[in-house]
Image (tube, rainbow, N blue to C red; front, side, top):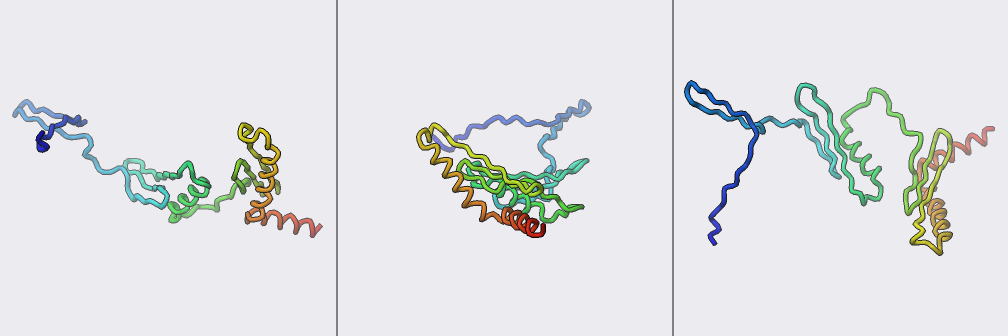
Length: 169
């Protein structure tokens, strides 16, 4: 078998064909021969991308990318967003959300609401894995919460604020 034999493959190309009957000429303009629709393309570590579209009404576009297996997808996407938008200045200060997840680990989630000074938590236990020791799993999640919360800066700030308010009353 000769490796120099190459089959020619038919490729369909979209475009516009023009026939001029006066001189029997045919002209073909391919559709894909166009300038790029993306300008000022920036990328960041993690796979995020920012660009400006070209055309009559240009838009600022942003894509963020994160692995499903990431330990903290929110933090990963936030880092990418911050890196891609560092040259943009908001017209007014951006308000922080009132609720923030402070723990998300091992089936346990804790949400801190700074406006109400409340902590909400929920735990998920797979009963098929923990049929006999479900009580031990509940205890493990409570211990996990007690270990993780003191390490969270935002949680500590709320606790200090509450203590100061109680001391002034």
